[in-house]
Image (cartoon, rainbow, N blue to C red; front, side, top):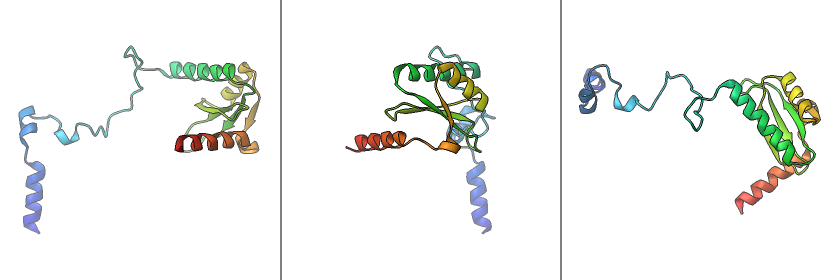
Length: 145
């Protein structure tokens, strides 16, 4: 057992050629891609600047407005906050096509829907419409064939 521990300790602490060449205090090659303690950074924009929270909200509202402009009979369904996600709103067209976007809270979602001129429903009270499930089924069948 002592021999196994000594061999393991030697393997762990012995510098390999790559880390020895990099110099003292450098990150071991096997740990470079891990990023365990790095903070999440927003995805950069095409020009390389990070996306701010305000820009992300504006992009979400623009996406919803475009969805409403290009589809007929769009309705908004509010989804509750969970342990995993913040509040979201699902926009569903009469064809069943849908899109989901995060919103700060229920009040903001209702304000966005009011600005877009579409009805708002609470998904916990009404559930999702059948047309959304039908559209998902058609898309699955289309992808598998």
